[in-house]
Image (cartoon, rainbow, N blue to C red; front, side, top):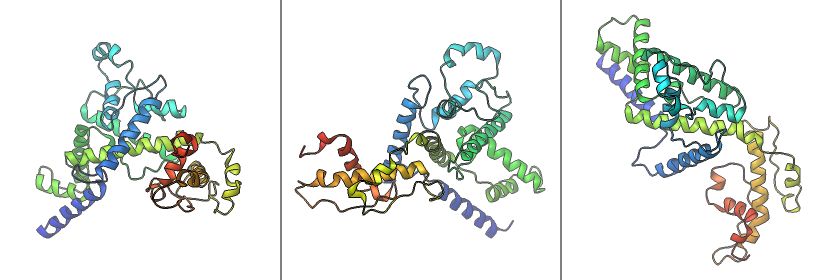
Length: 315
């Protein structure tokens, strides 16, 4: 391979890594938003994600670690850890509690092979099954690869194994380390430790958010949606259609929540800000998303006023 092509492949690798590292580095301003998102996800699933009360989690560390802790193979180790691990819960327990379903081919008592490489392969299959299961229920996880859910050591084993397999498939000469590394950089995205941790944290956060979306959000009731949109002061606002085929971005349940946000904002904006010392009552707003339209906090303040009117100064 020429030096020019080698440089191009390394440049492409750096570009791909940069595009994947969506969890910002510690020196970026965006880190505050991401840290608060992770904290909110951890808090909710710690409190409500389990069948027998709260179970503390840490993204991604406890989620990755506990699967290995439970799926031990050695009989002596099972006996030794019996009392320690009987209360250890995994992502599979969480899925079962929230959905009432077990993942196809995966049981809570299934053990991992003793061989480290075979363990890694088995875990990769389990994570692939998890992602396929969630996507079949409507989760948006096409950007999450099974290997992003690994422990760091398992990820290193996986990249080495994939590099060897790809090198053999391409008839790369065995034992020529330089060629193998060049080939793997071109065909296989290899992340360093810090890059992997950032991507793994983002991947696990996205998995849990999508678990919430497909198993918890559908509990939102639509029986009073028509009452919301028939209110007198809502008549001049465009309607948000909650039919399943009316949007390829938001689910029907998310659109019901958008309708609820619009109703509470329109009903409370005059009450909350009628005695405002600065500015005027905020204008009518059509809330159609969960990011841009909520940035200034006005819509969220109106939701608080709807259920906690004692927070309004005039009250």
